[in-house]
Length: 424
Image 1 (cartoon, helix red, strand yellow):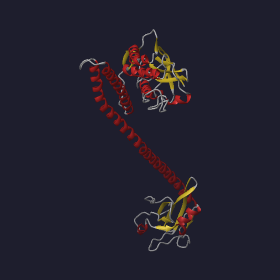
Image 2 (tube, helix red, strand yellow; image 1 turned 90 degrees about the vertical axis):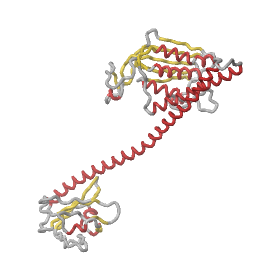
Image 3 (spheres, helix red, strand yellow; image 1 turned 90 degrees about the horizontal axis):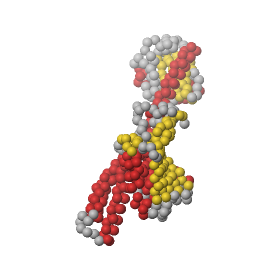
Image 4 (cartoon, one colour; image 1 turned 60 degrees about the vertical axis):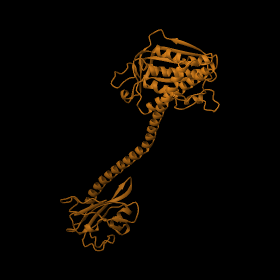
């Protein structure tokens, strides 16, 4: 690239024209410098000259400034065939970036042949340093833009794949739920003798159809919920509610699982009211997942304990409110735990908990059925409430799963920050 000399009287002691050249990464030539004012040298623009047969090349190779007061007699001067413009004096300095010569900057005088001096070289070097700063900044900006484009292209495909997966799961779940609801509905009707009296064998068959239909519907609903959350289309229906309703409902929903294995469920409820701002349906779903898992992994005759109390606990302040500090706010919360006397979880498997489609026991002979979605969904629902969820376990002794919900619901942007902020 080239830079023409500024209009008006040049500052380098009557310089008539000038140019800036950058080294080409390949090849042995250099572009002819760009001149101004429309003289016949314009026809030479863009042509290459041998780097080892020109003054520009000499400066670039040796990394030293050059002054020539008689270009006609200087052996380093390149004479381009057919170019009749006479240039008498020249001053050239190298352009350096990070200690490496990347080009040259030069000024010429073809009017009266007055020589250039050291002052002109200093002025030219100052100008060259400013040119290098601009070139470096441009290079950094271009590299940053290339990286941004590459990163955007790299992220676009996974995002598209995730979106297509979520759309497929949502559509598939909807298409499957319609016939399943019909199967479940007609099974219920027939079991109620709506189509005539059933014998014992027919009743057993229909109960199996109904039981497995409801199980499949629950799995489909879990997949649909997960796809909605991933697509950002899941919203909580918040309202002030008494968690006792969700607790007793979840205990009743899972009673058949415990009855089949002669398990006992102990319920420890705090005496204080359990009024919270929450989505009661989703909290009940979390409790159902934890209670059903406890029953699955607990042997016949085992015990399951559900404990609930109101207390104060630290919960993280949302990022948009915390600023640069990662802070926790002490809030009134409801603490819920489900403890069992089951097989427990090995320490190396604890990291698999709450991951989508993850099974602690993934062997073909695993004893408990499931898709690995229950805990993952529970974690997402609890975090949407602004709470936390976790687990502790002793192999062979049992496990305890717990979650904490803020009594006043999830903190929203613009809401007053909780008091007693502490740094972590």
